[in-house]
Length: 288
Image 1 (spheres, one colour):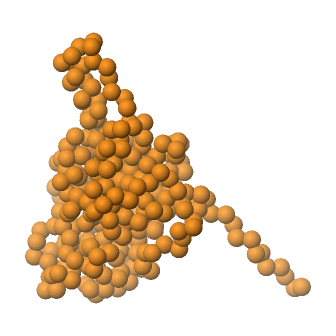
Image 2 (spheres, one colour; image 1 turned 60 degrees about the vertical axis):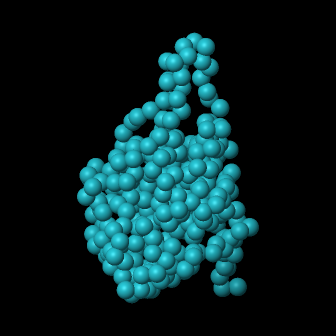
Image 3 (cartoon, helix red, strand yellow; image 1 turned 60 degrees about the horizontal axis):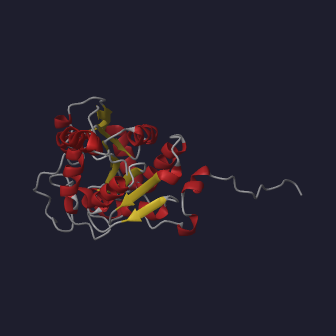
């Protein structure tokens, strides 16, 4: 034998966090959601969290599949209801670290009302929103995040509605941590996820991610790699940027960074403080 071929495949520590019996995943070639999951696993690896007390909640859509692939206590909620499900989970057991991981359509269209009220109440949870600018799983319909002039199956002549500026929405509603990255910025995104998970209160990360099958193809933007090149060439990192100035335009500049990192009492802290004031020593603080 001239040489030996090493047949053993090195163990990938990411696999320990996944339900490998459900792999391969269903995401399209060039989709960026898997990259965000890899960042999420790396963030968990270095977070020193007790994973028996970590729960992941997703809604419906391409990103909603994340809950099914994570080897954690995870829940796949109905469309738009990931945040209220996560709120109930957190209030029933405040010791849990609750993470909502879902898409832009699920969290800011059908679930938009839940998003703003969870931020307003400062419910202690982390929301990771993967924004692919479209309803991917259901056929490429226009979403509240579709940029003006971009086409979708329901706006074949271009979108004429203003889209959400999600960091501004989250901050104005009361989120204590707000950041935006793309699936190209894997190291920054991993760090942001670790910070958001460690934060007490409503923390929010928007992750821009390619949808090559529907959004990119329909808008003639190339494949997933082309979108990564676009992210690399058109992103500008501005930590602390005024969120009113970070709105997205069709194929325009992308402002990334950590925009908000502040402190304010969580929902449960406010509730306990209020009832302690009202009822005095007779009130027993709620801790689950």
